[in-house]
Length: 143
Image (cartoon, rainbow, N blue to C red; front, side, top):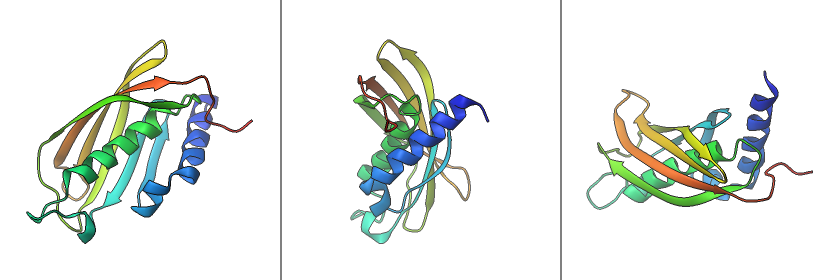
């Protein structure tokens, strides 16, 4: 394992320890590498809207979480500057979803990340998300 891989892993562990939202929703970080992250979540009855579908806000939250883990793998506190999502297919109660985030570009203090949310059982693309991050002058890892 390279030192960059080790830093990415440690950054994800540090964020996960502090991430109450991910813990409360049962999210699991299933993979991490420099500029990349995968996060899983099971759709629960509390996440389903009046149409019987997973609420878009929860899908956005899953994608945004994978984005956050990916853009913080370089040991610089990075926050979202902008994000948008396209919903491609519905998700339902009981579906296990995985969001895969990948860094597309880093420039100065900025970065662009794409996230694909898929249903694990059949690989159906549920949503595509693009986020732009802005790094701060602080490290993710404690000194």
